[in-house]
Length: 356
Image (cartoon, rainbow, N blue to C red; front, side, top):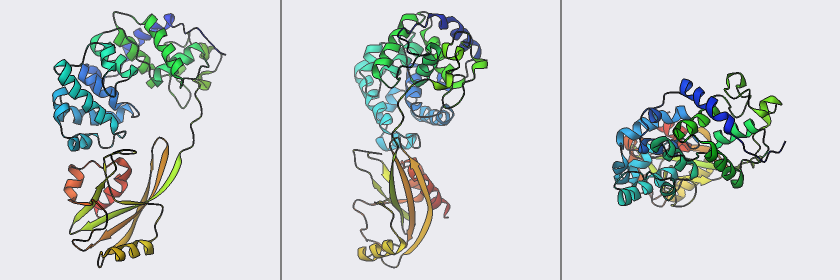
């Protein structure tokens, strides 16, 4: 069924009543300052709530306000973000923080339009900050909201289309309660997170909108929302090297553009390299009498690519040997506590730190 009228008036009251009674306690919700709302919304992009809580606690302990975020070194910032992925989110946070210090004396602007001008803040995040932290009537339409509303309307519109998102933003703006816009926006998000869930049968028996939901009335809940099938991810085979010299580990920085831009990593080759190939390479580089052992492999999934990784530990490398351009030797404690290593490499990091 195709539906052109996004009529949402009837859901406002029951949804808000449900939320007020059932909302979960979260650190950024319990202390909804503009900085905390902003930070949590950026962290929660592509990341589960439970996974974010500890990162949020650590981040706000070290960087409690916009000023401290603007001033922190990139190395420290990346370390605080380590494991959350999508590292440009953190870089944009800092770019925005610096602009907020310059333009607004360290306080995020109480304006949807001005928030949109800051790096890394799109319409959803601007709407969340404006409505939750400042009580401004502004829509905050994310995947949870689109899933709830498309099921509620029994609508087959493709939610990946920008035109559909914009139309839903206008529909929500038309009904959002001016006295509690943050409650309404959070209620829609919350319903999508705990009741009207993706990837499985929604919990319609617990839903405050079950009697109003048009998809539920005709048994189409699991068919919606409509979005195009994801393209299959490209698989890349890689060989990871854990180089050891006098108790130190060799790491390099990735290029400043592209996947995991500017982050530290263990040196790697494209493709799978065999043990004889590795030994020949070491000999050609003059590495000396090394000990080479195979490590447990790993796999990491990015949005459009999968890394399938094979690893080798190489011990006893001769001092002064230049194996890799721009290789930096660091102590194990430094590697653990100072340098941000993307989670893709953590299976190898754990092996080298444990000595296994």
